Length: 235
Image (tube, rainbow, N blue to C red; front, side, top):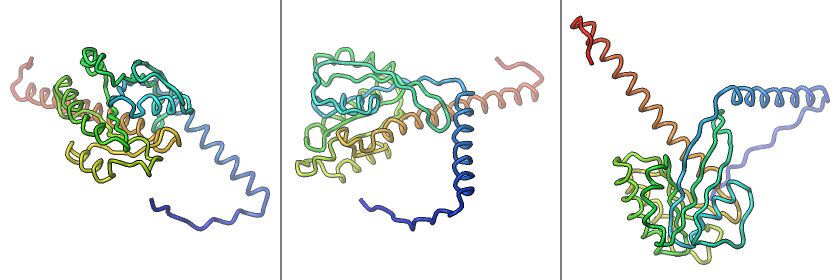
């Protein structure tokens, strides 16, 4: 990964300049926090899916608690709640960490119906884990009855490069085949790309909601124009 380097700016020697800079930055943060607190908190339901042992629970726990669980039971489903500020909006995220065990497959449709956004996880150390995701995605599209579903593809365990079995190109190719689905490689252990994954799904949900609201507004305008033209009320 290429890292862009920029020349470091010299700090003003004046203590007054430092004080002004600190006060200004503090004021900007306070203003952003005030704007976020003034908006009602939006709630979102996200579902994390993938095979056994790919690190779904580790990703979720790292996002919620900023810690890496060394031990966990992959057969247990769990749910979490986390409050976050995303793009100036206060958000409450309800996260369902599904079990990869087939024993829970009969409950999956219910989870998919309730979910608004989906995170599909594979391990870069396990070729089979990425192969299993196509069927999961098809199940999501079937249950939601649309191919426009907020979704992110995640290749977890990118810190285990020596054990890599799935190339980045494979992940990109799969995401492109899914209609340019967002794709990230992440490390739950090193907390790499963790926030980005969850925030991306939220932004997709917001964009989709805004699009639907815009379409409803357009339909309302077209209906009113039609009423004016014909002099009657259209039901």
